[in-house]
Image (cartoon, rainbow, N blue to C red; front, side, top):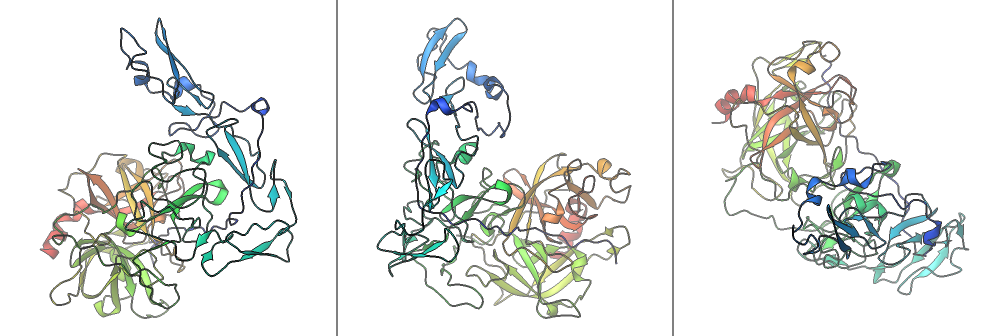
Length: 554
């Protein structure tokens, strides 16, 4: 067999301590020697650059020549003073920067040992929220669990066997670690008006406070525009401030990495159904569009780029062309289930990789799922199809060095004359306009569940961003040494490695934005190991095979 690598989206199982009752600790400003820590999109943690290096040039030039302080250019209640060079802003104690546009972060050091340092609008501009049973001032000491009842709404505190452990027994109408949420808590429509108390993600991770200092580098926090009307305050309850699909929150992932996820709260219109190996799911009426597949490459929800980048969990409505190619039953040593990714390009056609069918070319052995997010569960929005035809490129070749012409098409078997039904979870990706290549370093996107040759995969659909690499660079001796032909392309990071086609399924999509639409530009094909320097992922170059594709499907 070739070193064809069936590729992976690594999903790290995270375990985070469930949030506990709030206690507060305060310090004097005189105790702080770290007041110069500033978070901004252009400023990474640990950087020591002066504020001037952070400010874009336009900050100095948008004032009135006659009176540079009219109107006041200073933000966040800063006062303006005219100078010979223009103006100078005198900021309130919580802000700094040429226009007082940057929030000072006094939480640079981990002052809250068993708690979270959050920012406040009044001196000393931060407080320490301790996890129960730890107490102020530094959340380093604990009281005896249940000596003070942390359970709300009439809940009963029960000491655990382990030191400092406890559980709350909640009345029937309440749930949560501290009985803080109503059992029938739910959201309407997409949850933009949700103001409930759920603070746990779908996977059981505890939410960060919206006032957490870690969120200063994001656009969504208590200091952002319209924070109050969006329900963001000094709490950690799930909200939907950016019109996403449902309420969500940030949480702390592995090695302190900031992540996000949707919350464990359901639509008020749900109907519960018992499904094998899963919990009750909301019944959602498919969102039917006025016309069927009249547009391509336009997800119902756009990617929230301040939250998603590189190997992160995502949703089908952001990658609605994603398909799951599955074996119906075991063949040889291959178990039934998901084996490859694919891309819906027409209502009845899925584009994928030829090497996905080395085990069998018989359509009856396969089925295709559209509209799936959690690969191991039956979902309300999924669409399942049998396969009518599999077309593998005539010149497909599996060699010891590479996979050549690794492209295939699957024709879905129609039901009553129809195949895929367009919903916000099922849409087509656009084929490229022609054989013109995109500029180098164009940012493109891969998605999938990451099936590997060892049978492991992520249970959630994942997403990563990669950049296109020149053929010349990828064919250098230190990389693939002239193996790549015109039917292949590379994407990833040559110098650093990391995110590459290992973050996507074999046969899955590499889409690139052009004129506001996602075009299928590559098919995940093969690579040398995973995420190594000078060994980026290799994809089928779709523009090379555009005429072949059109000939088969038209």
